[in-house]
Image (tube, rainbow, N blue to C red; front, top):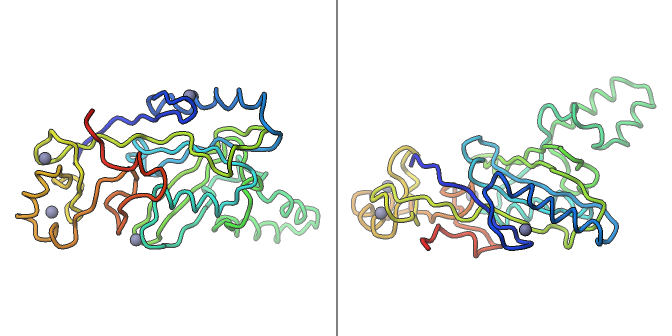
Length: 263
Ligand SMILES: [Zn+2]
Ligand SMILES: [Zn+2]
Ligand SMILES: [Zn+2]
Ligand SMILES: [Zn+2]
């Protein structure tokens, strides 16, 4: 498959559909209006994309995250919508250059060490912070506008994601994590007939070989590819983890999780 399906997302506030490039700005408009009437608090507009350049052109999530949510809650959400196959480990990490834009993250611990005047302790502390961020931490300890965080699910066949805090708002979110938009199912075409939307993927082939099939061509492929009949067939789903490990679809927002359907 060498395809470049277009990516668009529906605004779940108003139902209008936008190209990926425009949806975040549109959502900011809604949130700005909400600030006028919302309950005082703290919340964040967060964009989630695959970390790989190629995939990030297609897949995205737009989330409204309340300050009361923990990274564990975000982890649960990402697993439920995009990732969970067999309970692999996951981790949130700061990108290598986080210190530049940062300073807010564990500000108090760092301040304490600064005050103690022990530069070495502070350096050690900073070095440690490159590692995993505890999932028990509330997002307001970490998030600030324009922060970029890394996230990995499964340290074997890893799905690498990047979270960007687009903006923060002085109001409570409607729930801990609200899905505001995601890319609609992508129009992957069958690699064999090149006409029908693909519904299955044969995971033993390289991505540049024929690997995506519509229902009809999948039946034909099963005759020539033994592995496909045995174990290699996976469903086309709306996630950057499509075709990886045993991932066969999400547990929430399932109406937008299937293969593309011709209108
Ligand atoms: Zn809208
Ligand atoms: Zn797995
Ligand atoms: Zn086909
Ligand atoms: Zn095959």
